[in-house]
Length: 263
Image 1 (spheres, rainbow, N blue to C red):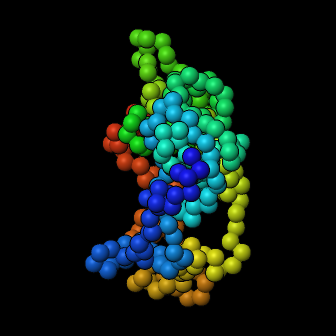
Image 2 (image 1 turned 120 degrees about the vertical axis):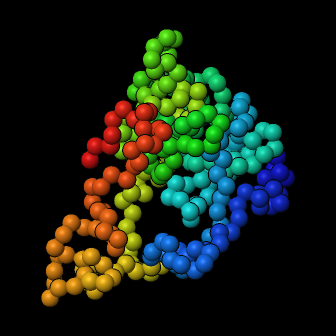
Image 3 (image 1 turned 45 degrees about the horizontal axis):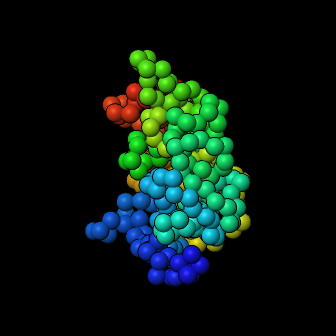
């Protein structure tokens, strides 16, 4: 196992260098403002899908991913594969975890959502089994299991009611998998940049206020002296920026949301 871990040829396919676009499209048009520059980065291919069932893995080392605030673990599976996984609060280097069908209250273990007890906190919850899309992957977040609809014949049979970090109540397929525990780096939301150069290292360019522009450049521009814009905050194209709903009314997953986000 030691030779397998130290072999760089096996670790190398797990990440690749990101190609910077500077917020431009293929034709050179700016499609995303305030992007550009920044340090060179490698993107880690994180194993969010629960492919290896009942195959234990050991944590080799911890890595800091510049593309996300959550820390990562390099793990080695018993079948010889290496992968990056999101670090769970309580997991340590050298620890052993597994994705199995039998629930055991150990942090970092993966189980089907229907096996999770009511009230438990999980992360990396699969919305649809074996589709690769999850919720609850950001640093310090956790999804709480509220109710299991396991009685056959009920209208919501086969679904689990969960509470997202945004207080939204949502139905998720009970056959989907999740990891027991909370994502590490809980204090990530309290981090602050100490100088403007740190933003440039992250690839963020300066932002100019709309009230400091001319009327032709922004709806808030123009006026004599310092003005507040004279209208609710909008984008350069006149779309409201504070309170406007951005979710599509006919989205196919709207039927799974029982309670909207309350703020």
